[in-house]
Length: 349
Length: 95
Image 1 (cartoon, rainbow over the protein chains, first blue to last red):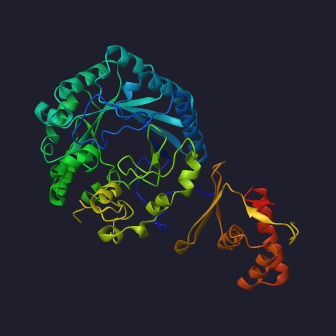
Image 2: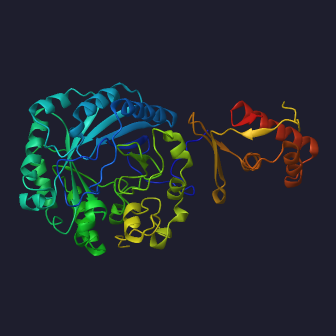
Image 3: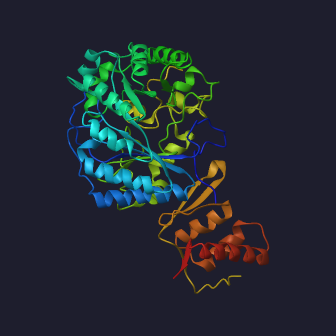
């Protein structure tokens, strides 16, 4: 028996930290108390599984992780997961008890985390960190995307979480509006005791369709990634997470930089009603975990098999000499060309 | 050793999925209920995919003899061994 992973025509691949991990991004609700302009959600909300079903899904995650010889990792998110606070804590308690779930993160806007919630979070055994989002180092920049008051609210949440000794990371979606604020944001986050900063590209889907003018050009992205790599290797106060497609182009010889897209390789996204996507940013349903289970989806999805085989790539991605390190963002290709195997539209190579 | 009995019908378990990437010589069997997964060789894949298409065992054995350059006795043994293993693993079921 052999684990089917990363079918790459026999090449060794560089995928830092992913070798023993299977990642589940779990959206337990689509409801949110914010209306961020770049959000991949739309206004339509899908049904939510009741707690009993959520616990069943968690058990399936644990079982699948064990079967595949992986340590399961989970991001509990939404929408705003604190809008299902009771279910969120019950799930966290459940994950704490499961043998093959190594840790989980909670991805939240932080607005509903008061002192008491921060204390509650501190009691969760396998909670690795809480991730919040900021869209810049300046209030005006952030609030123009995430709404008035969101900058102060998020910083307050970070302070409360850090006061309870909870590890915090921040995610920022790169746009023309905030691309020049990364260095300042790193300093700000360092002062606040944040441990990591993740940078995501804007994918024009959901509400984000209205921000296509904010997407970086290939040259802009190249310059920005080069700057980010320089910042990351200059002993920053916050660790910059560089394991995303296209980062490998900046420093192909550095094994800590870049990563293959996890879609089809070592990750699945579960939506509130149990619908499964290869990635939240690639919202093509490949089954429902409640009715199909993970095995049928993971083994049987034609889309996942297509994603796993790099010979299905098109355009410049197909013959790229960095295929072992980068295959582009399949979601970016999907929303740009209508074909998730098309070349990454922001690749500058 | 399994006796090849033409009157018996073997079918792929409904829980089984076959996958292949032939260009790189990779063939797999997946069980969608238990999660078990097996790498198999091309010959086993060839047999299972024929059974999936509901080819009878008798006819399949004749095809096997034509397809692979082996003696009848050797083919019988190999064929029976593969079927036996697949039955034991729940990949094939008797009807």
